[in-house]
Image (cartoon, rainbow, N blue to C red; front, top):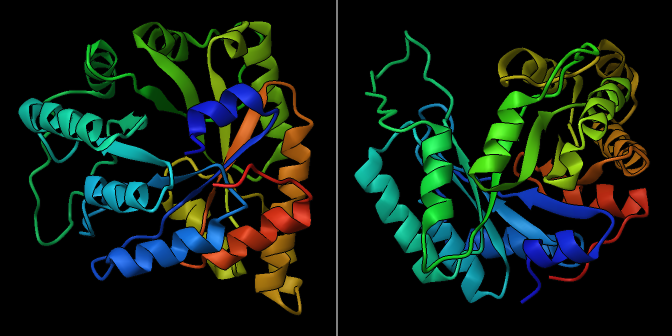
Length: 288
């Protein structure tokens, strides 16, 4: 099976896509999404529950993908489970044959959310990363989250360095549609020689409308959505097609930024738009 680990080692630019999961997701819908991505991406990312929306267990989704010969990158959040449950999930991931993990602290729920849900946070992301890295019977490729911003010349990426020391091999950014900002951020990581220790994967998406772009910029943690991108979508005769073209342009630009190892595309339920964005970009992943 072609894996994300192999792609990072063997390719100049690696592509992944994130499943769109909800309470109705089942084996058939997961396989359908994955098949739409076959030939376009190197691996499929399996998200944890976002906000308070409940969906199929990431480990169950990963098992479905593995049975279909598709390499999953499993997200694992500290928000909803204590350390016993997290260790149990690590053991389960290893037993299934999962090779790549993206541990994270998890986004806090809004204080006024209803129904009220207890948030756990028994461990933080670094402890979960360390636990995954220390497992003797597993050889996970471990990732972590990073936020693109405009650092000054004196900025030291201490958090990323600490994560690399704990065993992180790749970092994945939030959705970022600002190429100049990405260039500035990556220049600092290159200067600090961090790209010799971790691969950098940038978050993107084929955004289907100006309203969707505005919502992402305001509500998705850290998302960078320039006003010119929103305006371009607003003025487009076919916003959905324009969103795909914007994503393709971003992919081409990313490949030319020193230190960027690849991109992860979020589909918002339309896997075909991800495949089309990659096709238009001229980039090709190894076949799953």
